[in-house]
Every structure is written in C-alpha cells, then in structure tokens.
Length: 233
Image 1 (spheres, one colour):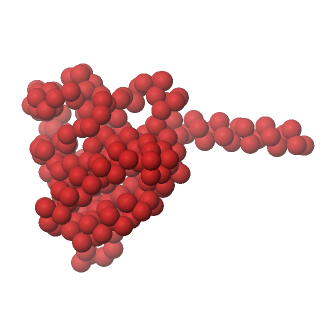
Image 2: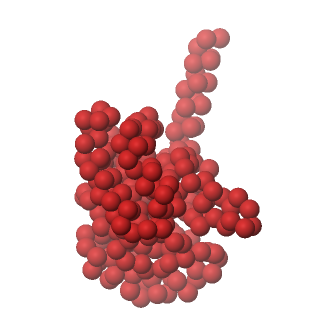
Image 3: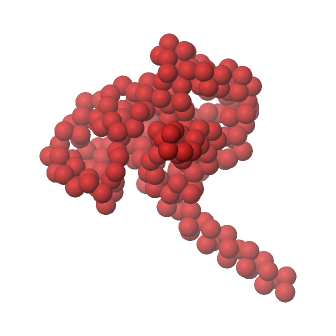
C-alpha cells in the first residue's frame, strides 16, 4: 500500500512511473546474485530489495517538491512494514514515458536492464558510466539495435539511504534477445565488465516493464495453446 501511495503521489505531482516491479521471481539476474541473495552470514547481501520503482520528474526541483510534501511526510509515518528503503535521484538522458501509455505498451520497449552499483573507487567508475553512454550511443552500429539509455550516472541526491546505491544505469529494450546482445557485446564484456569487477559491486537484472500484464499474457498464451491442441484433436 505504501509503494502504491508513493506511485500515485508521484503522478499527482506531475511525475511519471517508468517501472514498478515487486515480483523478484520475474527478474532475470545477469550478474551480482551474491549481492542480492546473501551467500552466508559473513557476507550479507547489499542489494537485498524485493521492489523496484523508477519514477521521473521534469526537474530536480519537482522531485524535492514531491518529497518534501505533506503527503509524503504523512505516508512515511506508516513505513514500518518496509524493512529497508532507498530513494535516490539520477539525471535522466531521454524524455520519460509512463506505464499507463497504451501506445507504448503495444509498440514500445517491454524490458528494462538495470545496474545497481556500489563504488569501491570513484574515478574508474566515472570512466565506466561515461563509456556506458558512449557505447549505448553506438549500439545500433555495434549490435544492430538501439539502446534506449534512460540514465547512466552517479547518484545526484539521496532522499533515503538504506541501500548503498552510488551509481545506476538503466536502459529499455523490446526483446530479451536485444538485451543479451548488448550484454554480450565486446564493448560491454571487454571494456565495461573489467571496470565493474575491479572497482565496484554491482547487481544487474532484466525486469519486465509491464509486470502487471504478465498474468494476462500467460493466460492468453495458455488459451492459445489450448485452442491449437483442440484443433489438432
């Protein structure tokens, strides 16, 4: 209920919701699982969250107007059921979309690739996000499909810090094969990954953008398969 109220509040203050996911079973972990699921009590997971929401505002001033509002102040009084919570801002690179856009649901990107990063060294990771943006710009040439890079930068401000997120990269894609093509490309594996392994702790996942539509899709898929079997009989 609290996450839903935050989502509605962002929209009430002129923001957009680009992603909301609270079903980790639907996430595809590409790397960093040890930072999501605690391997043992001596090595606690640092990104052990089970909900992700990406909201967007036109300006940082609008972000802080929403965050400092009476509505959010009252809502945070009831956050006790949420064990840990982190809210961070990062500068966006393209115009934001909203989940409620039916046109985008039909024809747009369906998946989001997100990297949550805890820095061990600042300068190499600044080189990382700068290179990330450069490689994303040439993705069409390198892998044959565009990379719609939403953001790739260090955290610009911290509203609530109960997870050690210090940089974040996110991009949207039409298909899983497009995401994997980007992730397995030479630029990513040979240029970006070494910087991550040497100078940061990272959790990288693929998340369905329209998570609430997955049940409808699976139901339609089962019905289609059932019809095919009936026709075969």
